[in-house]
Length: 113
Image (cartoon, rainbow, N blue to C red; front, side, top):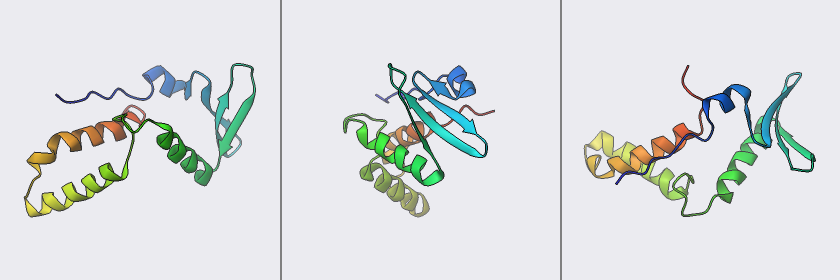
């Protein structure tokens, strides 16, 4: 049975660029990912390299059993499926895995306008 992966944020959270204690703050030309703990202590990350590093570390923090976790195996599957699509082999065999990968990536994106 296919796994259903829900979007990471609800529509209103995307509009506000905020989810609980995690939010986006624009400071001049810089965009900061801000994390606030329950005591009000704030940490922010900004800059493309640091934000991308945060994405990688957040992904790594997911349990290995979580279907949303991006893994080397999923990246290899995507490479294999891409190659298979050109050769016409095994594409149907990997359809469900490809759909899960697409759902995982889509769940990290804001809603289509």
